[in-house]
Length: 340
Image (tube, rainbow, N blue to C red):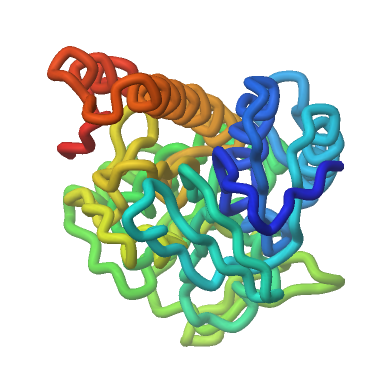
């Protein structure tokens, strides 16, 4: 694997080595760009034994996918660093950025892709954190098939609409679904709809989970009642790991995540975002696709910079013409000027 010199200005630094970051690095490496991937080694899906819905990789362990991806990057000279990024700042009058790592290394780069994902804020109910990713789950499309026809529970929470949606959805996989409203007050119409769908409602606050050998056995209510369940679905609150993006001044969308266009470009020139850090709905396959899309846009942006640099070398007083500005905008899907 290539090791970049401290004085080299990289074409791209990718912060986050998950599916989005590695996919972007692969595309940029194949485009013969100088790329470094910085990853803390703390992927969101670590608790999950397998991932699903990824064509040709269905059932693969998440860690195995990342290991294969990192191996593939070596072919194209992409550098991979196991470290934390502590700061990203402007290079000053020169275009590009300075990326500071906790290990003391400083990288200079023309562009940055942030693919740091999100974290799940879970209800503070005993047992949920301990069983998260095993028998306490979030995504039916990722996990429900493996527990088909077993007794399933759904916990009501802060994400009210998502919690109810999970209850309706999970009846496709099991005829034994119980909804635990917990702190949600159901309307008569909601109760009628759940009953029509064949979902049982267990009223009362949830006091904890009963587990045996790291597997869920029952949901305990505050009145002492135990409702036997093999799995419990929870809609967590999604918290994006977007501190680097927000410190750089990237604008946010109405839903609270950093706003990006269809290529992943943020409102700050030279900064892209991909995966769960900007899209809470992205599964692994979507994140990988977003990384690839962002990489193509980044390379287009770099090509325009290269052309401009070549023009300046022959005409020092020259600069972007209106036509070139329009060309950059079109290359980056209408947001090269980052007017999001």
